[in-house]
View 1 (tube, helix red, strand yellow):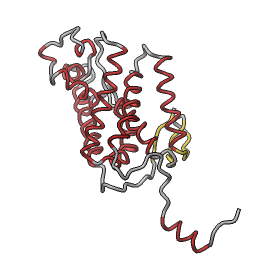
View 2: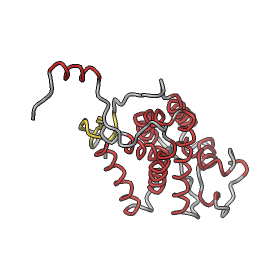
View 3: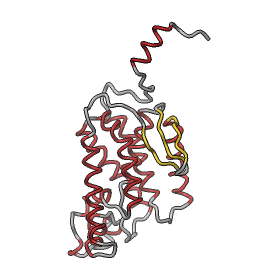
View 4: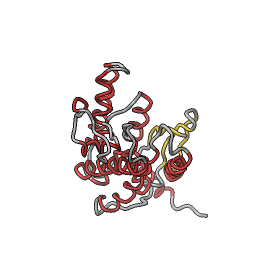
Length: 247
């Protein structure tokens, strides 16, 4: 549909998006370790099954072999979001995280953003588990958490211009409310159109719903929803010098 490239939306409350950076680095490192071990390696199987969210195991309908257990079952509601199945899977999720997470982290602060990210990942797993309660297939990928971030960014900065690569070819600057609203609607559409497909659309939708709700309670008190675009002071000075425009 589109690939986000850049938003140019500056930070106001934090100097740098340290939590976002750490999340991206952890995801990349885990993927590199899995890639280095080979696609068919036992290590990969252990990582996917041991860290992935498996509905049948989470709902006590099945039991994971002891040699595959890496973390407690309750922790897989979050750990699955740090495992990816291929480069495109990883790159797509990390692009969304890096471009949109910094302003969400800025709106909440580092600590609350960690909680927010985990809750969006959990919501994605819960929704997937509701749709496929007896599935033995592991859910992996940061899409649930990334979807929550997209929904939050839309509510925070709907008028900010975002550069995107449309259809993977054409770079265009578009208002975020156009880009992100279309993306969100697409997730809901695919949930019904391709429910049994390889993509866990339910996880995306769960993250979207969680993000849209959580931002109301987790943002800083001075952060407003539906903020207007940030205007450069230089532009304001130039406008003052020229005098008001007459319509």
